[in-house]
Image 1 (cartoon, one colour):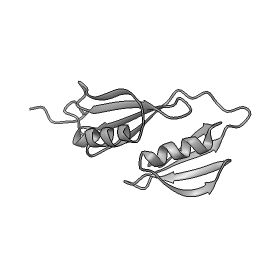
Image 2 (image 1 turned 180 degrees about the horizontal axis):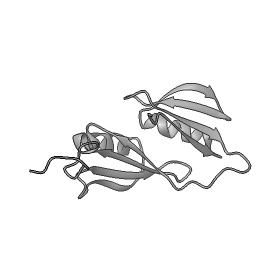
Image 3 (image 1 turned 45 degrees about the horizontal axis):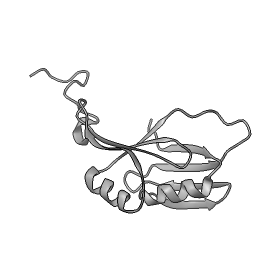
Length: 129
């Protein structure tokens, strides 16, 4: 199984699509203001933005986007006027993370984990040193 698609429901579809384009995603389907789909530059996964339906669920997820050079991406986005809620910070789980919010208030984490994402030193089944 491979997670390859996430959908965000929004009452600000145009602003949300433009926000994720600033992050580097590419619009591949455009039916705005009702719907748009964007492709991530690495890996081929997609993110959809869908007009908020009458009975949409309440969202309490965090979207994670890995960056090869988090600090450079932070500087690029800050220069474009993107406001971060937390600058790049090293974490005890060996990731470097920065946080921001999309126009709907969804929490976004830009991070760099490298090999520690799938192979942290404490991975189950890892050989003891």
